[in-house]
Image 1 (spheres, rainbow, N blue to C red):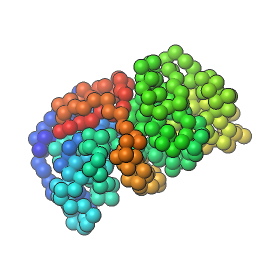
Image 2 (image 1 turned 60 degrees about the horizontal axis):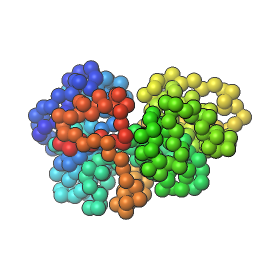
Image 3 (image 1 turned 90 degrees about the vertical axis):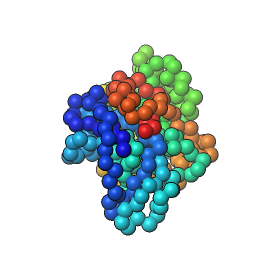
Image 4 (image 1 turned 180 degrees about the vertical axis):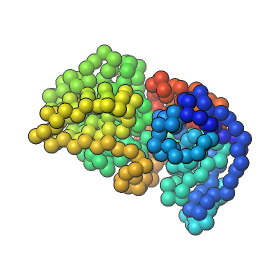
Length: 324
């Protein structure tokens, strides 16, 4: 089979397309024929050797962590999936013609949802669901700041917040992207290239701040979230593209009862609850047209390197999908 893999940790340009042996699935595993796979910032981090989930994996390794496709074979002990079933979920080696996933991390896929759309769902909606539902317990009518809003998790969080009846304020780096976020369901948009995020949030919320803030980029965005959060609010940090060394001045926290979470999707006690949310809420909402995932671009295996460079340049409006 063809696969996109790396032999060294030297960045996006290290990706090579190889012929790789197709192996049988191990116990508890499912081998799927990949119809579509989602690209994430963590795949870019993997090419530099900085993504913890892949840090101990031997090189060369096939990139990609989420895919949708058809079950090709099942390993010992797998009862819930059989060859021919449509599935979506977390896998290893998604950027290939075949990939492998644990049966406990795959979900059946309704016929109404295309493979391309399905492949855009797992990581971004698991992250958005974990943040908004399982950490912040967001309620209808609450204000939520999604900063930034134009990436995969951001666009997912906007639509999920809208579905749950919350009022989303989303940010982006230009007016065209801001308009796209408004089209997705954000009640207000902020162009952080020309507007001060915290000041705009205070103006929009009549100086009360937001009940929930999603920090998707680290140093810069976390500082803005801390300025914009209301008393008794909740900040959830899930990304670090603007830097790891965010300051946490105690004067901004003491006496305000603010909760701060730093979440990692695979190392979290709410992961399986988030997987249930994906199965029971998100996928049905997509099938019914209530959620319309944002797909920026579709590439083949040869386009993986260029797609990762696009992510590195922060030139995204949604997810990039790989169709092997």
